[in-house]
Figure 1 (tube, rainbow, N blue to C red):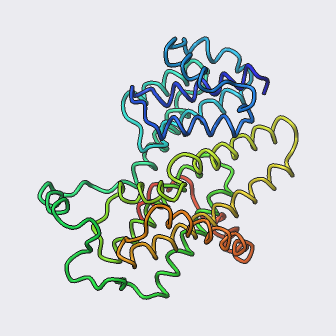
Figure 2 (figure 1 turned 180 degrees about the horizontal axis):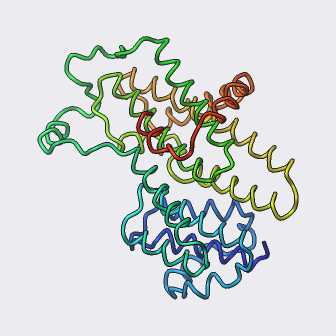
Amino acid sequence: MDQQQTRSILTVALMAAFADGLKDERERETVRQLAETLGAEGSIDLPAWYRDVLLSKPDLAEVVKPLDTPGLRQYAYEMAVGVVNADGAQNDAEAAFLARLARLLDLPEAASSAMAQQASAVAAAAEEPAPPAAAVAAAVAAPAAAAAAGTVLGKASVSDAEMDKTILTASITNAALELLPETIASMAIIPLQMRLVYRIGKSYGYEMDSSHARDFIATLGVGLTSQYVEQFGRKLLGGLLGGLGGGIGRTVGRQAASSGLTFATTYAMGRVAQRYYAGGRTLDSASLKETFTALLGEARGMAPKYQAQIEHAAKTIDTRNLVSLVRQG
């Protein structure tokens, strides 16, 4: 991609982030990380670019004109889908933006609409129904770190062996998703991580919903932003460069490395969650980040040991059933 095409894709991503009229900091961070993924950080003045896009409100039809190949147009659309769903399932305004973008990029309507809907469904699958108002009021009145009545602090409702299996299985599944060629597969990784944290918290007797899991992951410095774009953007960019430059070996190597990192991130996240809820949620933000960083280093060394299982899992995943996969967690 040349400089004009890179800026075009970044502008599409930023417009997608604010398509719902909400200046969500998580989505803004997603676009910043996208700039780094594309290697554009050194040549684009991001603060000035933000102001230019947000204040001048450029015409989307003009923005996409430099994208003159099918690969670039598809890349821009899939990245916009990823950004829109970075903070959860897309709303009506975001869906309308994606539909218009697909038309301007001259993408097949049925295929682009199906992808957007599937991505939204995968993001929504991680969400839990809101608790009744009475339960919310009771939770607000209770101590912040209180577990459910009758729960023994530090004692999970499952055995240590079952907890180990839960964390390891989630790590292998997410690493397998990263190996799949379909970009939609990467969209299931963070929802599955949210479900893992949710299940661990529940096993220790805590009232949980998706917002608790999301906030916990964000506290670790992972959240819905940098990891999402690192995984999703690298897969898209790797596929684009592989297709344009014949770099099949480089693309496969990049995917394998990303898969190992995804395994390590998920595993470390699960272990930190286990310690956090077992200890009565007393670890502060700094301790959580420090523990996560240490466990991430250990988990990276574990990934090669499970490579065969990761590759086997990749062969069994049907991307048409990602919503069910996330819900089952």
